[in-house]
Amino acid sequence: MPALSVNSFLLEKADTKPSECEDAIAVDVQALRFAIADGATEGFNSRRWAKRLVSAWIRRPPGEINILSLRDDVSALGTKSTARFARRKLPWYLEEKARQGSFAAFLGLQIAPDGRWTALALGDCCLIQETSSGASSFPISTPEEFDNRPILVPSLIDNYPRCIEHARELAGVSLPGDLLLLMSDAIACWYLGAAEQNPSAKLRLHHALAHSNRKDATSLIVEERAARRLRNDDVAIVRIEVTSV
Amino acid sequence: MPYNAEISRANPTCVIVLLDQSGSMGDPFGGGEAQLRKADFLADVANRTLHDLVIRCTKAEEIRNYYSVSIIGYGLTGGGVTSAFEGQLAGRTLVPISDVGEYPARLEDRKKKVSDGAGGLVEQAVKFPIWINAKAENGTPMCAALQQARTILASWLSEHPHCFPPVVLHITDGESGDGDPTAAGQSIIDLKSSDGNVVLLNCHLSSQRAAKIEYPSDGVSLPDPFAKTLFGMSSIMPGEFRAAGAAVGISLNEGARGFVFNADAAALVQFFDIGTRPGNLR
Picture 1 (cartoon, rainbow over the protein chains, first blue to last red):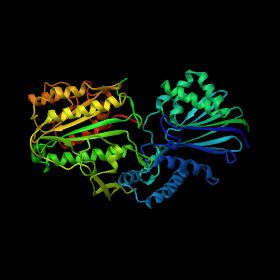
Picture 2: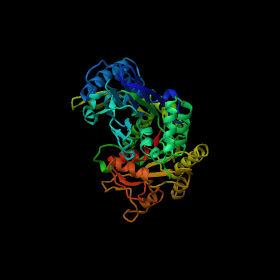
Picture 3: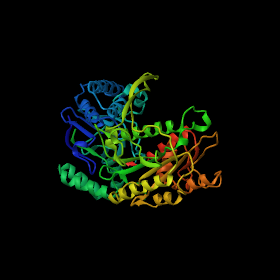
Picture 4: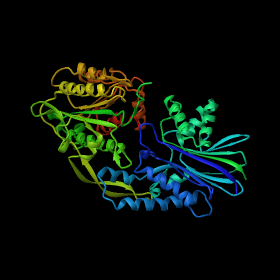
């Protein structure tokens, strides 16, 4: 069983309320499961959908995780989610939104007791692994690859059957001293781009996260947003430091 | 860099639609092949545009006030210029988008084709909101309508000096009945926020079976002085709006003006889409 030091951080966009944050995080250190999701603002109640996706990931019974299992899980979750609002009488504009469904980018990580890991992603949430020999990022590896129209996880997956073709799966191994970072799109883009040019900012983020210093992490993000190096979007980060395997 | 201000509840923007509701709008579209009056089709497209704006601004379970909207009709009885909203919004010149969503004049039952989840389409009953009814009467007080739009915009910009620049969509089928509109149009284009000048787009609807001219860069190919007048008072399309054109399949040159002459039904729908699509909603 690997020993992990885990910290998570969630921050809403500037000028919005914490209750409007559409990013979501779920962590179960005992089960070695971690997930982040980024609800699409354009969707119907995508905030709740993002929360449901990450919660379902960490509550999933033990078993093989792959793209097909992700599809089945999303289908079942979407059916439950749709049934819940179908009982409500909605104004015309929410009826219309509900017909379109909810959408979220999703990244789930499962670490095995021997340190091997499996990640599944659909959308632009990223897993960045930093080892003594360098860093890699999945499913997006450079800042230039982020755009505003990624394929997302829909609540009505039967209406978007081809979306699952865009899901990605990656397996890897973590060793003592490695860092695994789950990040939603804006902060991942910053981390892979602007922060690479500015190691002190990167260091400051790690220091704040490792010490659960929410105030300093928030200040850094506010400063980077103000300098327009970081897009004004919700931020979700799970930082996992592998201390032993 | 202009035209990149975020549109947010703290920094909303404004959309004005000027509808020619003069008597000639009762004529059939495009020489009659569509079997539809211009006024009817225009009202339908305007209602659909409002519908789409409301949907775009609906986040979580509320309509966020990213826009305020003005729909001005001109040509009404008495040669007037007035709000074209009906029902509870009647008489209001500038309405936050949340009120637009909450208070349509009525909801019509319509059918919509949606995915059946197996690669096909099924018809589904939907509620379609109506805010504006088709009207076609009297003359064409275009200058007065443009002046009213300018008054609304000047007030808006004094309260929202850093907003994404407001957009004015003007749809007409005939020549101005109250003088040369060039100065009134130019006075709108001259207004600006810190993010750029107001964008005035003009669309001329045709009663003839005539070739349409979309977003020209110069006035050389325009057939008459009236077309040249509308061309002259149309904004040069900013990059954001050219990108919106590309998104609906229309390639716009740098220097293209926001002007469509002899628009058919498809061109009118695209005109509204291009005019209301740009903007980074937060």
